[in-house]
Length: 172
Image (cartoon, rainbow, N blue to C red; front, top):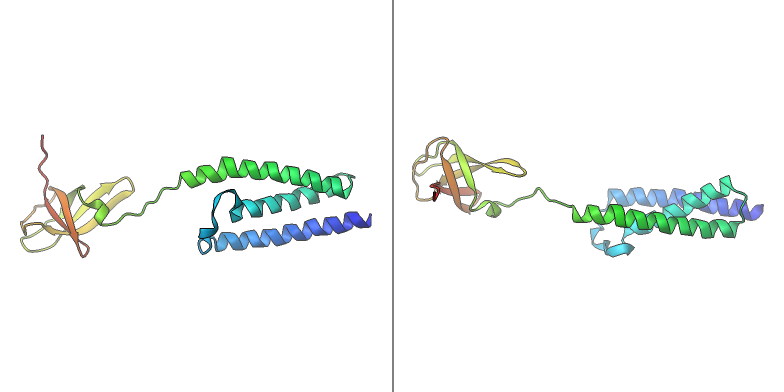
């Protein structure tokens, strides 16, 4: 009976400790993001240890099994759950990561629309519709030409955050 209480305390303290480490990892994951290398990344290791402690504690409470059997069964349960977590949740999440970030240079060649008329040798404003939403930017004529309201423009270049545009003329 004394052995069961010691193992139960070990599982309980392990569950509390690994739970706290997991919370800290979630809070500071970006700072230690470089450790993310395959199946031995911190998420899978922490989940493996957490599943061992949780299943071992539950098995000790619900069954009358010997401590060694509980440890072996807890290892098996943890291995299966960690495998399922890694291959059915973590891998799809990693491959589905999409960034909504863009750079001004990545908008070159896009077609926008003038919302504030661009005067000769002056600045106006354009909007560019992307899959991430509508982006408005300061613009000036590429050849210092005037461009009226609601005209389509082609983004030629970017200079210090100002888009250099020409009136868009479709080929067809």
